[in-house]
Length: 115
Image (cartoon, rainbow, N blue to C red; front, side):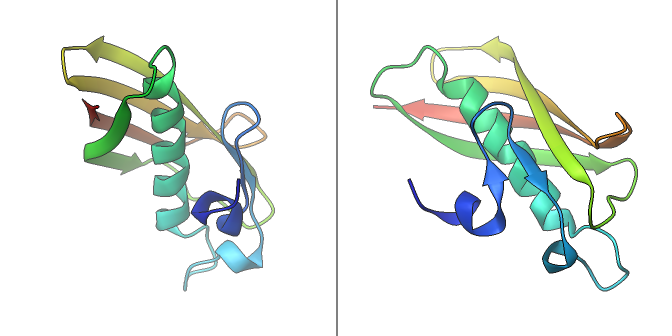
């Protein structure tokens, strides 16, 4: 499957992971926050879809707290957990860390489920 996640280099074969490069750099030389947000969203989407059939999911709300800057060359991994599953809404949390297990960001989101 080709798409945006492939374009930015996110590997989804396990927990979503990206090996960052100069292409992911912001104006200050760190990893662009949008890439970290995308990594969190990808992990949460993967977690919310586990156990679903043909239903579709969509991010309704996403809040990210950036804890430490990523550095180009880092391998960043996002791990998400479903906190509460309701009828049509799912609440999740996710953490991004680097190859040294340093916390990079934390996210909280609500996803909607539709047929």
